Image 1 (cartoon, rainbow, N blue to C red):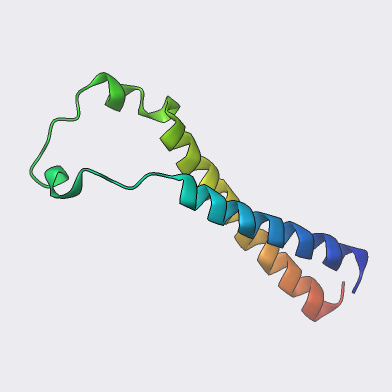
Image 2: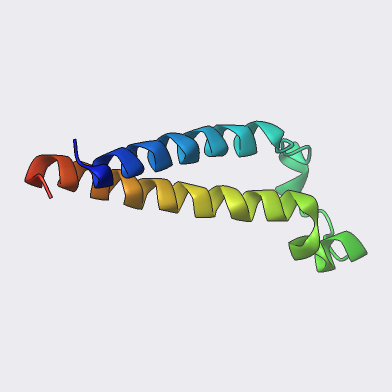
Length: 83
């Protein structure tokens, strides 16, 4: 294994652990079927939704998932092609 492969493996493991931790820290949806019934979402919370901790956790989870996918593909290519 080259130094690139080792760095990518370590980065892949760190991102995987980070995704699991971010996923477990997030709260579940408590709205349930109320969303289908057309509950009003015109509140201060809905207007400031992007700044809440929950939305930031979701954003970071998506970013980590995309990075994990990219690093995994690059790691696979580097192992198969022996870069």
